Image (cartoon, rainbow, N blue to C red; front, side, top):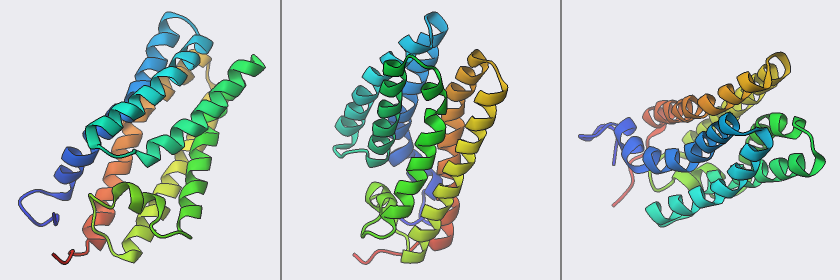
Length: 196
């Protein structure tokens, strides 16, 4: 559907993409926050490692396809979370968003050498962009991921753990909204009509 039809690009993204993806992305974050509030950081990490694959499975059952971006994020976060639990250090938990966003940005960059790219594979059924549009969208997402990585570094280094946990939890939804806004902006600029 073109953004100039009866529904805007934002509405299409919200209806077809955001609802199920928010479930996939936000459920682990809310679990992390709630369990940390009730127990501690290690229990929250262990619980989140269990909830994340369940959220991905739910995302698959809802959309009947694998949520590739969530899977990449889950692999990175699970590796860092397990490293933290095994090393008995909170550091790995706190730097996991930094490393995760950094690796996500790297994965997006590397995927530009493949056809289709990671974003095109994940969003290609929802968006019809020109080749340049997919590149602009990918570089926009890379920049956004690196900004969030830097922000996480500042918060965990300068604030108490509970403040960092609140930031980490309530940061996820604005991050998703940011990605949707970026995607909408690029889609409006680089939309390409599909031949039927």
